Image (tube, rainbow, N blue to C red; front, top):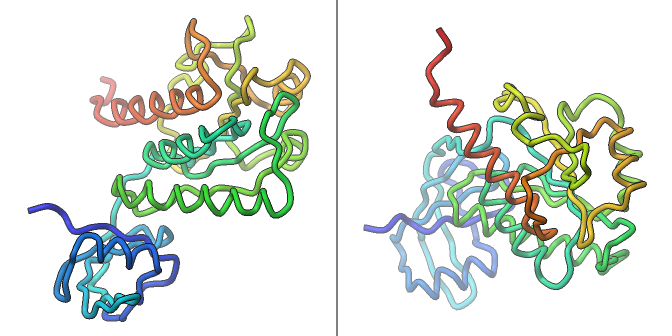
Amino acid sequence: MSAPPRIFVAEPLAPGRIVVLPAQATRHVQVLRLQPGSSVTLFNGDDGADWPSEIVSIGRSRVEVRLGAPVAIERELACHVTLAVGVPANDRMDALVEKAGELGAAAIQPLVSARSVVRLAGERAGARRRHWQAIAAAASEQCGRARVAEVLPIATLAAWLAALGGGELVRRFVLSIDASARDAADALGTESDPRGGRIVVLSGPEGGLDPGEEGAAVECGFVRVNLGPRILRADTAPLAWLAWFAVRGRADLRAPPAS
């Protein structure tokens, strides 16, 4: 028997409450030909829980679901990871947000930098952010996370660096092809499981960050790291780092304690 479909709802949840599903989820239930009495799982991305639920009524444009008791879910990375990325062209950002959500990113910061092809502002920027946030929610529905990666407002690289401040982000890395860049594993050292800590990884758009921008990041405490001898696309590099970090963290957690 397949698992019940998981549905994201952006509202507080409580046992026994009747929830009206949003329009997209309603269409999904209808496509699956679910019936009253069918099981679904709801989550809101905030409370860290799945909510086993039962469909109580289905109309042409309305589906009502009764919530059961919450079940705590822990599928997050050991620390809070923010990917700060120069927005790549075409639809590559859509795929980047989706995969980053699946791999466990806590937040995604879209950036505009000197070499950016995509330059969004005003209502267009707000619309794209809402679109990417919906993709992040769908990624969590698919992969089983009870949290949803937060897509932050689009910012210029300079403004974002200026707003970072000094202390909250514990470790800062910028993906680079500079000769001085350190191997990612060496740069992370033995702290691959900084429980409760924060890591931010900065990656440029097509063509990368220009030397002045990369230098400004280093002045803000970022450590240059590389991902090997190949030049990765703007949408590949941050995902490669995130996948490596997620797998490395799980391996470290399984390793026996040093004698």
